[in-house]
Image 1 (tube, rainbow, N blue to C red):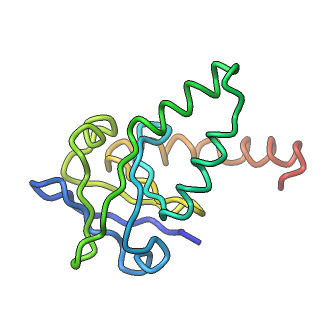
Image 2 (image 1 turned 90 degrees about the vertical axis):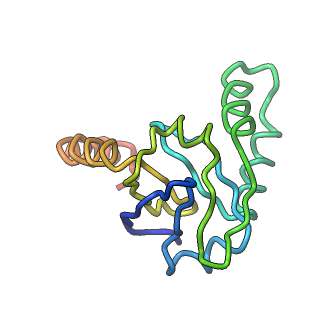
Length: 144
């Protein structure tokens, strides 16, 4: 399970050191793709294959299915974690996520999200202000 919040610096070559305690969970090869809210998703290869299989099984007649599959597949890139525990963020993905020098990685269950630090701080502040209402809504759905 990927959890926690980790603040790191993106180096001049767009390399990012993965949190040491999460490296064994992610494995030596990860898939990096555009995520929601202008984040990047880092997935263990086995998790990516599960998601890819699910997406490939969605109905092609559904515009939403086609759009979301294109969104994830088109930006996805497999990368090797180097001997220092770093991954290289491709330029198109760094641009999509608006990554500057300071980034935040957040463990979200089966994926690691990469956020620009300023965007993460704004998102966290907005979400904290809504936490009670979000919990109430999940309670109504029987999820909390």
